[in-house]
Image (tube, rainbow, N blue to C red; front, side, top):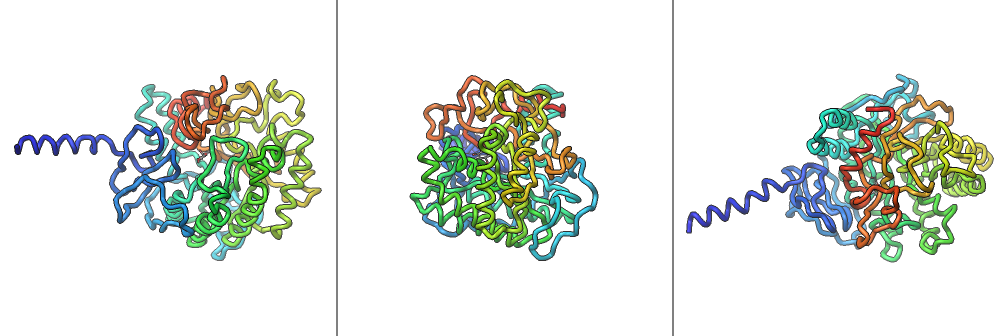
Amino acid sequence: MFKFAALAALVSIIPLINAQSPIYGQCGGINWTGPKTCVAGTTCTYLNDYYSQCLPGSSSTPASSTKPPVSSTTAKPVSSSTKPVSTSTMPGGSPTTSSAPASTPTVAAGNPFSGYTIQINPVYQAEVVAALPAISDAATKASAAKVENIPTFFWLDAVARIPTLDTYMAAAAAAGGKRLVQIVIYDLPNRDCHAKASNGEFTIANNGAALYKTAYIDAIVAIIKKYPSVRVVAVIEPDSLANLVTNLSDPNCAAAQSVYLSSVTYAMQQLTTVGVVQYLDAGHAGWLGWPANLTPAAQLFASLYQSAGKPAGVRGLATNVANYNALVAASPDPITQGNPNYDEIHYINALSPALQASGFPDHFIVDQSRSGQQNLRQQWGDWCNIKGAGFGTRPTLNTGSALIDSIVWVKPGGESDGTSNTSAARYDSTCSLPDATVPAPEAGTWFQAFFQTLVTAANPPL
Ligand code: BGC
């Protein structure tokens, strides 16, 4: 009896030992078959139906990856953990051209990146570290390890991510000097109205407009306010305003229009109160860069900005977020035929005068995270886990254009664009087109095979 009990105890321990996800590792979600418990000091936290993640801190209640009640109007308690993360300086940054960090939350003038060191996104760093052991080729592994210290943006794609922002900001403040934290505001009600892969946690039908303000934006603002020495740069709501320029014939986007506008207005105004430098997402050359779309796009950005009272935090626009276009293409990709703005620099140069005419600040950042290889797509509208994509130009202030504040990596390369599982609720057929890498996991979750290709196809090489 004793022997049996001891054996049973051992058997019940073994899977626990072998089945713990690391910090920021996945620990649950629909179709998730990996470990469902987390290493000590972290808690399995529900982010959405498809993704639960081991986040820092231990909860007073047992770890749970089940969905929290949606009726809550307050954010979850924030973590006060100050886990150190490694840091990196930004190549090409000019040393000290901007003023010292403000002790009061005023918005910096000029290029917000100048003179600042970007605090490394701890979530992405952990994902990359966890990806290394599975890479068998030594040279590829060594190249992959370098990605760990490249600054990417931290996507606040669910309320449950917000406590990690506190950890991230605390680490930046503790590091001292001029530190900059990069975030993406990405939780609009009825998110991703013209696609399915990134539909979010809030819906207009379920009080999403109010929850976006109180449970999401207010909670983020409260954390940022705690760290006045840390500069924050934010990309605001990828795809949302671009969808309002070109996709209002889609009933999902038409239904979301007024809530998108009021929600983005609230975000711009509230983030300005804590000094966040903001770039509204402006799609990419193959979307708003078509000549017929330039003026309507500029007018939408400008009218929203002006009706919001010209929030001082709004610095300009972010382009190519999570897309695959080159900043400067060696030659036009055949799929761009018919559009003179065949790359991001042509798009930016064409949009700038329209912005000026409309009264919107014409400064830009451009995502080049996965733009290293070109001429990969069958159609310009393809956006999902593009086969053969490689990491692109590293973040730098040497942008080649006075309009562009910085080349950035907004998309953390290796996180999926969307699932190719045809039976998934968020399945978007774009994710199983011939130029998409399959099988692909849910949007935002780690896609090891895709990451390894990004590494080996990196241009310039890692
Ligand atoms: C996903 C987000 C994720 C982001 C960055 C988006 O496509 O919907 O959940 O955070 O990509 O990987």
